Length: 574
Image 1 (tube, rainbow, N blue to C red):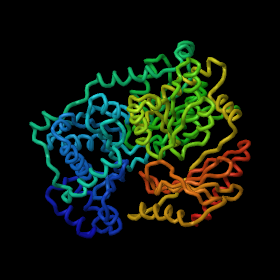
Image 2: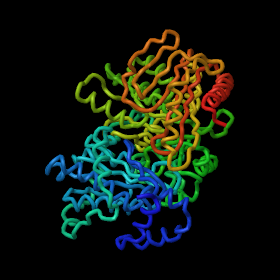
Image 3: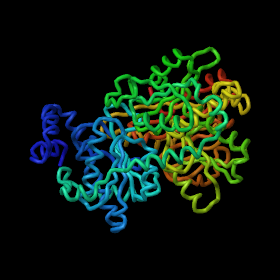
Image 4: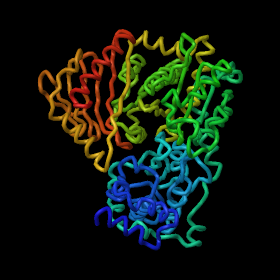
């Protein structure tokens, strides 16, 4: 059927709920909107699915959620009765309809005689990841669109190890989902099934989570000395981080002043343009409060509390929003420093980062004699490394991070954890305060030690039903368009992650990257800088990453401008 016929089949179906009928009736004369809603199916990839909230096959709604869950249920059923008993842990954040979608998922599982462990209130990504492991569930579901604008929601699936489901299992689940043509015909549970299979996750699971986090503290003496008097501001940006972040800070003895207006569960995120704490604008209310009380650090978490944004006061007394790369190197430096000072740094310690994350991580790890591994974008790949090392004991995982403000210390969870990152950031402030310096001071010391690196990324939006296809076509075009120089920087090697091949520009020699396949082109530059181009896995945006090594900030900014101009010329982007 074409999109018009699919639209008519939905609107004429008696099973369609009243809200959906009213919404779809309003667009009956809007051909473009109907085509967007029904001209495709919401893609379910390795990061689950994410889309604009609304009714249609290409939107986030109760029917697309039920269909996806039915596909997951069929997959679990193939694993046997024991897997069905172990069940699925389900959580959700503060977004519009997140609670409704979570309940709908639980009911679909119950209708398939699969146990659904459902949180009774909002809980962040890391606590869902922890619950999957603690409850010995066979899978997990997180209803969230992370830091996306309020119009979006999403659905992420986790494997039994607490990491996002592997590409191999996801492929099987997607196969089951695609077999389901009748969106409105997903089985409904009986009252008996609801009672038998839907269980509320007990509060003791939360207590175990906090207990695991307390084990990860690194500066108890410094916290004891200044934690209660600390001037530090935190905002949950209307998200699920409010309770867990303030709880863990209180448990370890750190005072944080909270932006009260942003503690409310506001589905419109009405105090910010977008609920992404990476942006200084999102932290503006926190910064205003910090200036009022004389704080030097502001941090905030996104709706599902897997990302942490940080702003610090510089030498001029103005707040600067740190990039995810800068927070990452600060935490990496702090963790390795404290472990070494306490003689607790394992001989086989290892750090994992995505390959688009700052090149400065290697210099820091080299100084501490710690192995560094690079993986594709997606925290599940960091989770996979943890899983492998737990079996082989080749390395001891100490920290993992991504430039997109995602960090994880500890193995209690297998996804980004802004709760533990908040705890470590607050603790880090205490540590440097006890040494009569600020976090900003330490960042400058890091640059003085390792050289200046400027990391940034830009996003080019794509629109329409073919957005993902068009983005991938741009990346594919780069593979057949030789590039040996980006203005002042020569290209030394090109990595094609879709083929797992690295090509030496000077010799033409090829070597294996040793990475899971993903559509991405990465240019290694002669001084250790890099440029990387990849399509986003969650949004219709082409992402371009720059890591520029230079003598100082001024030179790096000039070089970055030249590199960006050269890349735009290569991509023919106006």
